[in-house]
Image (cartoon, rainbow, N blue to C red):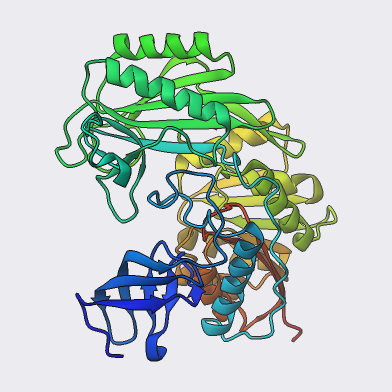
Amino acid sequence: MTIKKRKAYEFEIIDLAFGGKGLAKPDGFPVFIDQVLPGDKVFAKVVKKKKSYAEARLIEFIEKSPKREKSRCEYSSYCGGCKWQELPYETQLEYKKNHVIESLAHIAKLNDVKVNNVKASENIYNYRNKMEFSCSDKRWLLPEELNNPDIKKDFGLGLHVPGTFDRIIDLKRCEIQPELGNQIMNEVRIFIKNSGVPAYGLRSHEGFWRFLMLRHSLYFDKWMVNIVTSKENDELLKKLAKLLIEKYPKIDSIVNNITSKKAGIAIGEFEKVLAGKSYIEEKLGEFTFKISANSFFQTNTIGAENLYSIVSKYANLTGKERVLDLYSGTGTIPIWLSKDAKEIVGIEIVQSAVEDARKNAELNNITNIKFLIGDIKDVLPSFKQISNEIDVMIIDPPRAGMHKDVLAQVLNLSPEKIVYVSCNPATLARDIEQLSTKYDVLEVQPVDMFPHTFHIESVANLSLKIR
Protein backbone atom coordinates (compact mmCIF):
# COMPACT_ATOMS: atom_id res chain seq x y z
CA MET A 1 0.00 0.00 0.00
CA THR A 2 1.34 3.43 -0.95
CA ILE A 3 0.15 5.99 1.60
CA LYS A 4 -0.66 9.40 0.16
CA LYS A 5 -1.57 12.64 1.89
CA ARG A 6 -5.23 13.72 1.78
CA LYS A 7 -6.31 10.18 0.88
CA ALA A 8 -8.50 8.00 3.14
CA TYR A 9 -7.75 4.35 3.88
CA GLU A 10 -8.85 1.47 6.05
CA PHE A 11 -6.45 0.85 8.93
CA GLU A 12 -6.16 -1.85 11.58
CA ILE A 13 -4.78 -0.54 14.86
CA ILE A 14 -2.14 -2.85 16.28
CA ASP A 15 -0.57 -0.86 19.13
CA LEU A 16 -0.55 2.35 21.18
CA ALA A 17 2.36 4.72 20.78
CA PHE A 18 3.71 6.99 23.50
CA GLY A 19 1.56 10.10 23.26
CA GLY A 20 -1.62 8.03 23.26
CA LYS A 21 -2.14 7.65 19.52
CA GLY A 22 -2.99 4.35 17.92
CA LEU A 23 -0.51 2.73 15.56
CA ALA A 24 -1.31 1.04 12.26
CA LYS A 25 1.39 -0.47 10.04
CA PRO A 26 0.14 -1.10 6.50
CA ASP A 27 2.99 -2.93 4.74
CA GLY A 28 5.20 -2.00 7.71
CA PHE A 29 4.75 1.77 7.31
CA PRO A 30 3.79 3.47 10.62
CA VAL A 31 0.57 5.51 10.63
CA PHE A 32 -0.50 7.26 13.84
CA ILE A 33 -4.20 7.89 14.51
CA ASP A 34 -5.80 9.61 17.51
CA GLN A 35 -8.91 8.38 19.41
CA VAL A 36 -8.38 4.72 18.53
CA LEU A 37 -7.31 1.58 20.43
CA PRO A 38 -5.56 -1.66 19.46
CA GLY A 39 -8.04 -3.96 17.74
CA ASP A 40 -10.01 -1.12 16.13
CA LYS A 41 -10.55 -1.18 12.36
CA VAL A 42 -11.11 2.33 11.11
CA PHE A 43 -11.47 4.53 8.06
CA ALA A 44 -9.09 7.49 8.39
CA LYS A 45 -7.72 10.32 6.23
CA VAL A 46 -3.98 10.94 6.01
CA VAL A 47 -3.25 14.52 7.09
CA LYS A 48 0.56 14.38 7.32
CA LYS A 49 3.03 12.28 5.35
CA LYS A 50 6.75 12.03 6.08
CA LYS A 51 9.40 9.62 4.80
CA SER A 52 9.25 7.39 7.85
CA TYR A 53 5.67 7.81 9.11
CA ALA A 54 2.25 9.37 8.54
CA GLU A 55 -0.55 10.77 10.68
CA ALA A 56 -4.23 10.25 9.92
CA ARG A 57 -7.51 11.64 11.26
CA LEU A 58 -10.29 9.25 12.23
CA ILE A 59 -13.36 9.42 9.98
CA GLU A 60 -15.35 6.43 11.25
CA PHE A 61 -15.06 3.05 12.90
CA ILE A 62 -15.46 -0.02 10.71
CA GLU A 63 -15.17 -2.36 13.67
CA LYS A 64 -14.48 -1.49 17.29
CA SER A 65 -11.89 -3.32 19.36
CA PRO A 66 -13.05 -6.10 21.69
CA LYS A 67 -10.76 -4.48 24.29
CA ARG A 68 -13.04 -1.44 24.55
CA GLU A 69 -15.12 -0.90 27.68
CA LYS A 70 -17.95 1.56 28.12
CA SER A 71 -16.55 4.90 29.22
CA ARG A 72 -17.79 6.41 32.45
CA CYS A 73 -17.42 9.90 30.92
CA GLU A 74 -19.83 11.11 28.23
CA TYR A 75 -17.16 13.43 26.80
CA SER A 76 -14.27 10.94 26.56
CA SER A 77 -14.55 10.52 22.77
CA TYR A 78 -14.10 14.27 22.22
CA CYS A 79 -12.15 15.64 25.19
CA GLY A 80 -8.37 15.59 25.35
CA GLY A 81 -8.26 14.90 29.08
CA CYS A 82 -8.69 11.12 29.33
CA LYS A 83 -8.14 9.43 25.97
CA TRP A 84 -7.82 5.93 27.42
CA GLN A 85 -11.04 5.68 29.44
CA GLU A 86 -12.37 2.90 27.21
CA LEU A 87 -9.25 0.82 27.82
CA PRO A 88 -9.32 -1.48 30.89
CA TYR A 89 -7.08 -0.06 33.60
CA GLU A 90 -4.88 -3.16 33.81
CA THR A 91 -4.25 -2.87 30.07
CA GLN A 92 -3.38 0.82 30.44
CA LEU A 93 -0.67 -0.17 32.91
CA GLU A 94 0.75 -2.76 30.52
CA TYR A 95 1.08 -0.19 27.73
CA LYS A 96 2.66 2.35 30.08
CA LYS A 97 5.27 -0.17 31.21
CA ASN A 98 5.99 -1.08 27.59
CA HIS A 99 6.48 2.59 26.70
CA VAL A 100 9.19 2.85 29.36
CA ILE A 101 10.87 -0.40 28.22
CA GLU A 102 10.73 0.57 24.53
CA SER A 103 12.11 4.06 25.19
CA LEU A 104 15.08 2.63 27.10
CA ALA A 105 15.70 0.05 24.36
CA HIS A 106 15.28 2.27 21.29
CA ILE A 107 16.69 5.57 22.58
CA ALA A 108 19.17 4.59 25.30
CA LYS A 109 20.08 1.25 23.62
CA LEU A 110 19.58 -0.44 26.99
CA ASN A 111 17.74 -3.73 26.51
CA ASP A 112 18.42 -5.40 29.85
CA VAL A 113 17.30 -2.76 32.36
CA LYS A 114 14.96 -4.11 35.01
CA VAL A 115 11.64 -2.25 34.63
CA ASN A 116 9.18 -3.19 37.36
CA ASN A 117 5.44 -3.47 36.91
CA VAL A 118 3.75 -0.09 37.15
CA LYS A 119 2.72 1.02 40.62
CA ALA A 120 -1.01 1.52 40.09
CA SER A 121 -2.99 4.55 41.21
CA GLU A 122 -5.19 3.74 44.20
CA ASN A 123 -8.01 5.81 42.68
CA ILE A 124 -8.60 5.80 38.93
CA TYR A 125 -11.44 8.35 39.13
CA ASN A 126 -11.82 11.53 41.22
CA TYR A 127 -8.04 11.51 41.78
CA ARG A 128 -6.95 14.94 40.51
CA ASN A 129 -6.43 17.61 43.15
CA LYS A 130 -6.19 20.38 40.55
CA MET A 131 -8.26 21.12 37.43
CA GLU A 132 -8.15 24.09 35.06
CA PHE A 133 -11.25 24.84 33.00
CA SER A 134 -11.23 27.38 30.18
CA CYS A 135 -13.97 29.90 29.44
CA SER A 136 -14.98 30.62 25.86
CA ASP A 137 -17.50 32.91 24.20
CA LYS A 138 -18.19 30.16 21.66
CA ARG A 139 -18.56 26.60 22.88
CA TRP A 140 -17.98 23.48 20.79
CA LEU A 141 -21.09 21.39 20.17
CA LEU A 142 -21.20 17.64 20.66
CA PRO A 143 -22.45 15.70 17.60
CA GLU A 144 -25.86 15.06 19.20
CA GLU A 145 -26.25 18.80 19.85
CA LEU A 146 -25.58 19.98 16.30
CA ASN A 147 -29.15 19.68 15.02
CA ASN A 148 -30.86 20.78 18.23
CA PRO A 149 -32.15 24.37 17.75
CA ASP A 150 -32.53 24.78 21.53
CA ILE A 151 -28.78 24.43 22.08
CA LYS A 152 -27.00 27.77 21.96
CA LYS A 153 -23.46 27.95 20.70
CA ASP A 154 -22.44 30.64 23.17
CA PHE A 155 -20.65 30.43 26.51
CA GLY A 156 -18.71 27.31 27.39
CA LEU A 157 -16.72 26.27 30.46
CA GLY A 158 -14.62 23.16 30.23
CA LEU A 159 -11.69 21.50 28.47
CA HIS A 160 -10.26 21.80 24.98
CA VAL A 161 -10.99 19.58 22.01
CA PRO A 162 -7.61 17.91 21.29
CA GLY A 163 -5.37 19.84 18.93
CA THR A 164 -7.33 23.09 19.20
CA PHE A 165 -6.87 26.29 21.20
CA ASP A 166 -10.32 27.80 20.70
CA ARG A 167 -12.75 24.85 20.90
CA ILE A 168 -14.07 24.35 24.43
CA ILE A 169 -16.35 21.48 25.41
CA ASP A 170 -18.96 22.74 27.89
CA LEU A 171 -18.43 20.09 30.58
CA LYS A 172 -21.14 19.40 33.14
CA ARG A 173 -18.91 17.00 35.04
CA CYS A 174 -15.37 15.68 34.95
CA GLU A 175 -14.84 12.16 36.26
CA ILE A 176 -11.23 12.60 37.34
CA GLN A 177 -11.87 15.41 39.84
CA PRO A 178 -13.71 14.94 43.17
CA GLU A 179 -17.50 15.24 42.91
CA LEU A 180 -17.75 18.52 44.80
CA GLY A 181 -15.56 20.05 42.11
CA ASN A 182 -18.29 19.34 39.55
CA GLN A 183 -20.86 21.08 41.74
CA ILE A 184 -18.63 24.14 42.15
CA MET A 185 -17.90 24.21 38.42
CA ASN A 186 -21.60 24.18 37.54
CA GLU A 187 -22.35 26.86 40.14
CA VAL A 188 -19.71 29.11 38.56
CA ARG A 189 -21.06 28.35 35.06
CA ILE A 190 -24.56 29.51 36.05
CA PHE A 191 -23.19 32.66 37.67
CA ILE A 192 -21.11 33.58 34.62
CA LYS A 193 -24.04 33.02 32.26
CA ASN A 194 -26.24 35.29 34.36
CA SER A 195 -23.55 37.92 35.00
CA GLY A 196 -24.13 39.88 31.80
CA VAL A 197 -20.35 40.10 31.41
CA PRO A 198 -18.85 38.33 28.38
CA ALA A 199 -16.47 35.39 28.46
CA TYR A 200 -13.05 35.76 26.93
CA GLY A 201 -12.87 35.12 23.18
CA LEU A 202 -9.99 32.78 22.44
CA ARG A 203 -9.68 34.28 18.95
CA SER A 204 -10.77 37.88 19.53
CA HIS A 205 -8.91 38.18 22.87
CA GLU A 206 -11.77 40.29 24.18
CA GLY A 207 -13.99 39.56 27.16
CA PHE A 208 -13.72 39.12 30.92
CA TRP A 209 -14.02 35.51 32.20
CA ARG A 210 -10.93 33.43 31.32
CA PHE A 211 -10.39 30.37 33.54
CA LEU A 212 -11.76 28.51 36.53
CA MET A 213 -9.09 26.65 38.46
CA LEU A 214 -10.03 24.33 41.33
CA ARG A 215 -7.68 22.83 43.91
CA HIS A 216 -8.60 20.20 46.47
CA SER A 217 -6.79 19.19 49.66
CA LEU A 218 -7.34 15.45 50.09
CA TYR A 219 -6.10 15.29 53.69
CA PHE A 220 -8.05 18.31 54.99
CA ASP A 221 -10.91 18.04 52.44
CA LYS A 222 -10.78 21.77 51.65
CA TRP A 223 -11.05 23.61 48.34
CA MET A 224 -9.50 26.59 46.59
CA VAL A 225 -11.37 28.40 43.80
CA ASN A 226 -9.26 30.55 41.50
CA ILE A 227 -11.15 32.77 39.05
CA VAL A 228 -8.89 34.07 36.29
CA THR A 229 -10.13 37.20 34.53
CA SER A 230 -8.76 39.70 32.01
CA LYS A 231 -9.21 42.67 34.35
CA GLU A 232 -10.48 43.66 37.79
CA ASN A 233 -14.14 43.75 38.82
CA ASP A 234 -14.27 43.46 42.60
CA GLU A 235 -17.99 44.08 42.91
CA LEU A 236 -18.94 41.25 40.55
CA LEU A 237 -16.36 38.76 41.80
CA LYS A 238 -17.17 39.33 45.48
CA LYS A 239 -20.79 38.45 44.72
CA LEU A 240 -19.58 35.15 43.25
CA ALA A 241 -17.25 34.55 46.21
CA LYS A 242 -20.05 35.22 48.72
CA LEU A 243 -22.35 32.79 46.90
CA LEU A 244 -19.72 30.02 46.85
CA ILE A 245 -18.60 30.45 50.47
CA GLU A 246 -22.18 30.36 51.76
CA LYS A 247 -23.19 27.34 49.66
CA TYR A 248 -20.02 25.26 49.95
CA PRO A 249 -18.47 25.36 53.45
CA LYS A 250 -15.51 23.22 52.30
CA ILE A 251 -14.21 26.10 50.21
CA ASP A 252 -11.32 27.60 52.21
CA SER A 253 -9.90 30.00 49.66
CA ILE A 254 -11.25 32.07 46.76
CA VAL A 255 -8.79 34.15 44.77
CA ASN A 256 -8.88 36.19 41.57
CA ASN A 257 -5.89 36.09 39.25
CA ILE A 258 -5.90 38.92 36.72
CA THR A 259 -4.04 38.82 33.42
CA SER A 260 -4.35 40.82 30.22
CA LYS A 261 -1.82 38.63 28.40
CA LYS A 262 -3.07 36.75 25.36
CA ALA A 263 -1.30 33.51 26.27
CA GLY A 264 -3.76 30.81 27.31
CA ILE A 265 -2.18 30.20 30.72
CA ALA A 266 -4.20 30.35 33.94
CA ILE A 267 -1.64 32.43 35.81
CA GLY A 268 -2.30 36.05 36.72
CA GLU A 269 -0.04 39.06 36.51
CA PHE A 270 -1.32 39.77 40.01
CA GLU A 271 -3.74 38.18 42.47
CA LYS A 272 -6.47 39.27 44.88
CA VAL A 273 -7.98 37.28 47.74
CA LEU A 274 -11.77 37.38 47.47
CA ALA A 275 -12.63 35.21 50.48
CA GLY A 276 -10.82 33.06 53.02
CA LYS A 277 -7.08 32.47 52.75
CA SER A 278 -4.63 32.87 49.88
CA TYR A 279 -3.72 29.16 50.08
CA ILE A 280 -4.92 25.73 51.12
CA GLU A 281 -2.96 23.14 53.06
CA GLU A 282 -2.24 19.53 52.11
CA LYS A 283 -0.30 16.71 53.73
CA LEU A 284 2.12 14.28 52.13
CA GLY A 285 3.01 11.65 54.70
CA GLU A 286 3.80 13.50 57.93
CA PHE A 287 4.54 16.82 56.19
CA THR A 288 2.20 19.77 55.66
CA PHE A 289 2.38 22.02 52.60
CA LYS A 290 0.84 25.40 51.87
CA ILE A 291 -0.36 25.54 48.26
CA SER A 292 -1.14 28.87 46.63
CA ALA A 293 -3.02 29.28 43.37
CA ASN A 294 0.09 29.28 41.18
CA SER A 295 2.22 26.81 43.16
CA PHE A 296 3.29 23.56 41.55
CA PHE A 297 2.04 20.51 43.44
CA GLN A 298 1.66 16.94 42.17
CA THR A 299 -1.93 16.57 40.94
CA ASN A 300 -2.46 13.06 42.38
CA THR A 301 -1.91 13.31 46.14
CA ILE A 302 -1.79 9.58 46.96
CA GLY A 303 0.23 9.01 43.79
CA ALA A 304 2.74 11.61 44.97
CA GLU A 305 3.19 9.72 48.25
CA ASN A 306 3.80 6.52 46.27
CA LEU A 307 6.30 8.31 44.03
CA TYR A 308 8.24 9.90 46.87
CA SER A 309 8.32 6.63 48.82
CA ILE A 310 10.12 5.05 45.86
CA VAL A 311 12.55 7.99 45.68
CA SER A 312 13.23 7.48 49.38
CA LYS A 313 13.76 3.73 48.89
CA TYR A 314 16.26 4.26 46.06
CA ALA A 315 18.09 7.08 47.89
CA ASN A 316 18.53 4.66 50.83
CA LEU A 317 19.51 7.40 53.26
CA THR A 318 20.89 6.61 56.72
CA GLY A 319 21.06 10.10 58.20
CA LYS A 320 24.71 10.66 57.24
CA GLU A 321 24.31 11.67 53.59
CA ARG A 322 24.53 15.02 51.85
CA VAL A 323 21.89 15.22 49.13
CA LEU A 324 21.77 17.56 46.13
CA ASP A 325 18.32 17.97 44.57
CA LEU A 326 18.17 19.45 41.06
CA TYR A 327 14.90 21.04 39.89
CA SER A 328 13.69 21.13 43.50
CA GLY A 329 10.48 23.07 42.74
CA THR A 330 8.42 23.85 45.83
CA GLY A 331 10.57 21.50 47.92
CA THR A 332 8.33 18.44 48.19
CA ILE A 333 11.06 15.84 47.56
CA PRO A 334 13.72 17.47 49.79
CA ILE A 335 11.18 17.88 52.59
CA TRP A 336 10.07 14.26 52.17
CA LEU A 337 13.71 13.09 52.46
CA SER A 338 14.75 15.54 55.18
CA LYS A 339 14.30 13.28 58.19
CA ASP A 340 16.72 10.69 56.72
CA ALA A 341 19.47 12.99 55.38
CA LYS A 342 22.26 14.93 57.08
CA GLU A 343 21.88 17.88 54.72
CA ILE A 344 19.96 18.66 51.51
CA VAL A 345 20.55 21.44 49.00
CA GLY A 346 17.86 22.14 46.40
CA ILE A 347 18.38 24.17 43.23
CA GLU A 348 15.45 25.76 41.38
CA ILE A 349 15.23 28.53 38.77
CA VAL A 350 11.68 29.74 39.59
CA GLN A 351 11.89 32.28 42.42
CA SER A 352 8.28 31.87 43.57
CA ALA A 353 8.80 28.10 43.83
CA VAL A 354 11.90 28.61 45.99
CA GLU A 355 10.00 31.02 48.22
CA ASP A 356 7.25 28.39 48.63
CA ALA A 357 9.87 25.70 49.34
CA ARG A 358 11.45 27.79 52.10
CA LYS A 359 8.05 28.50 53.65
CA ASN A 360 7.13 24.80 53.55
CA ALA A 361 10.43 23.82 55.20
CA GLU A 362 9.81 26.41 57.91
CA LEU A 363 6.21 25.22 58.33
CA ASN A 364 7.52 21.71 59.06
CA ASN A 365 10.35 22.92 61.34
CA ILE A 366 12.99 21.53 58.99
CA THR A 367 16.43 23.06 59.36
CA ASN A 368 18.70 20.79 57.31
CA ILE A 369 17.58 22.02 53.84
CA LYS A 370 18.96 24.96 51.88
CA PHE A 371 17.26 26.15 48.68
CA LEU A 372 19.23 28.03 46.03
CA ILE A 373 17.72 30.18 43.26
CA GLY A 374 19.25 30.02 39.80
CA ASP A 375 19.68 28.19 36.53
CA ILE A 376 21.11 24.78 37.40
CA LYS A 377 23.75 24.96 34.66
CA ASP A 378 25.04 28.19 36.26
CA VAL A 379 24.77 27.10 39.92
CA LEU A 380 26.07 23.54 39.64
CA PRO A 381 29.74 24.37 38.82
CA SER A 382 30.15 25.85 42.30
CA PHE A 383 29.69 22.34 43.73
CA LYS A 384 32.75 20.93 41.94
CA GLN A 385 35.05 21.71 44.89
CA ILE A 386 32.87 19.70 47.27
CA SER A 387 31.79 17.01 44.80
CA ASN A 388 33.23 14.28 47.03
CA GLU A 389 30.84 15.40 49.75
CA ILE A 390 27.71 14.82 47.63
CA ASP A 391 26.48 11.31 48.35
CA VAL A 392 23.13 11.28 46.54
CA MET A 393 21.76 13.41 43.72
CA ILE A 394 18.02 13.67 43.03
CA ILE A 395 17.10 14.80 39.51
CA ASP A 396 13.46 15.64 38.74
CA PRO A 397 13.52 17.67 35.50
CA PRO A 398 10.60 19.01 33.43
CA ARG A 399 9.22 17.02 30.49
CA ALA A 400 12.02 18.26 28.24
CA GLY A 401 14.57 16.50 30.43
CA MET A 402 17.99 17.82 31.41
CA HIS A 403 19.85 20.58 29.60
CA LYS A 404 22.96 19.13 27.93
CA ASP A 405 25.22 21.42 30.00
CA VAL A 406 23.58 20.20 33.23
CA LEU A 407 24.01 16.60 32.11
CA ALA A 408 27.73 17.20 31.47
CA GLN A 409 28.14 18.78 34.90
CA VAL A 410 26.35 15.89 36.61
CA LEU A 411 28.77 13.46 34.95
CA ASN A 412 31.63 15.70 36.04
CA LEU A 413 30.46 15.72 39.67
CA SER A 414 29.84 11.95 39.60
CA PRO A 415 27.95 11.39 42.89
CA GLU A 416 27.83 7.78 44.05
CA LYS A 417 24.06 7.54 43.57
CA ILE A 418 21.53 9.26 41.33
CA VAL A 419 17.75 8.96 41.65
CA TYR A 420 16.18 10.26 38.44
CA VAL A 421 12.46 11.09 38.50
CA SER A 422 10.86 11.50 35.07
CA CYS A 423 7.46 12.29 33.61
CA ASN A 424 8.58 11.51 30.05
CA PRO A 425 10.03 8.10 29.07
CA ALA A 426 11.63 9.53 25.92
CA THR A 427 13.70 12.20 27.68
CA LEU A 428 14.42 9.81 30.56
CA ALA A 429 15.93 7.39 28.05
CA ARG A 430 17.84 10.15 26.25
CA ASP A 431 19.45 11.35 29.50
CA ILE A 432 20.11 7.85 30.81
CA GLU A 433 21.94 7.01 27.58
CA GLN A 434 24.50 9.66 28.54
CA LEU A 435 24.52 8.83 32.25
CA SER A 436 25.05 5.12 31.51
CA THR A 437 28.62 5.88 30.42
CA LYS A 438 29.42 6.24 34.14
CA TYR A 439 26.39 4.72 35.87
CA ASP A 440 24.71 1.35 36.10
CA VAL A 441 20.91 1.52 35.85
CA LEU A 442 19.89 -0.81 38.66
CA GLU A 443 16.15 -0.64 38.00
CA VAL A 444 13.29 1.60 36.95
CA GLN A 445 9.97 1.83 38.77
CA PRO A 446 7.08 3.36 36.78
CA VAL A 447 4.34 5.00 38.84
CA ASP A 448 0.89 5.77 37.45
CA MET A 449 -0.18 9.25 38.52
CA PHE A 450 -2.59 9.85 35.64
CA PRO A 451 -5.08 7.01 35.00
CA HIS A 452 -6.85 7.05 31.61
CA THR A 453 -4.00 9.04 30.02
CA PHE A 454 -0.76 7.94 28.34
CA HIS A 455 1.34 9.83 30.91
CA ILE A 456 3.62 7.83 33.17
CA GLU A 457 6.09 8.82 35.90
CA SER A 458 9.24 6.74 36.34
CA VAL A 459 11.93 6.60 39.01
CA ALA A 460 15.35 5.30 37.91
CA ASN A 461 17.92 4.02 40.41
CA LEU A 462 21.47 4.71 39.17
CA SER A 463 24.74 3.72 40.83
CA LEU A 464 28.25 4.89 39.90
CA LYS A 465 30.16 2.13 38.13
CA ILE A 466 33.04 0.48 40.00
CA ARG A 467 36.26 1.91 38.67
